[in-house]
Image (cartoon, rainbow, N blue to C red; front, side):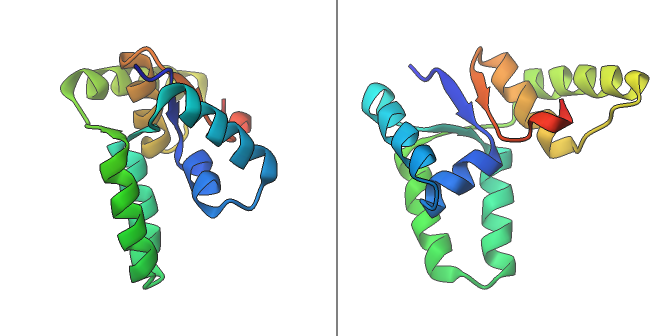
Length: 122
């Protein structure tokens, strides 16, 4: 059973393997959990970036990564939770992007910790 949901920035760093600490922690997580878990929104964000760069071979590798891991779909409960988050952020004057809201809502709905480097947004 997964314990964490990787945000787009985190999964991107895991894929790039440029940071030794991120790579070490990712390997530890995989050893303990067997698979990464991320949102279909993260899948979209990474895939669109690769397509925009014409990085077809990287996109194929990413497709294989998606098949080996858990990609959580966008469900109605997630949309409702996301709308609640949006409303609260709007009222507080602290809006963030819809993708970030839906990824956070996915983590909440599935009871997963969100692994992100976007801490300044929260």
